Length: 133
Image (tube, rainbow, N blue to C red; front, side):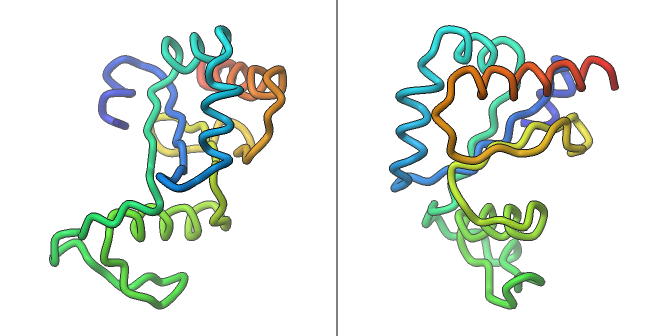
């Protein structure tokens, strides 16, 4: 994801989501489906969806004890949940983070908000900051 974003010179949107996240589906159905939002997500960003409830086991050599929760991180979902909690001090979904190729924030992350205009402003601000960095 990040390597591809660097290759195509686009900012990244990290989408912290879940298979069983009702509000995530609402955002996808009601906000991401908007023509302008969809165009921005498709043409201006590299979208990386991180499923915090993915039950797939991590290989033994990739499992670790979380420094934040002091619990063993055993699944892909645990890994993304731990990353969200450790890096962004939250564990809610949906949670959207706009970054450059180095992981630097382009604008304040955004949670559940069904305002299409607000989401377009959020995405455009990230693009503006990325192009000016």
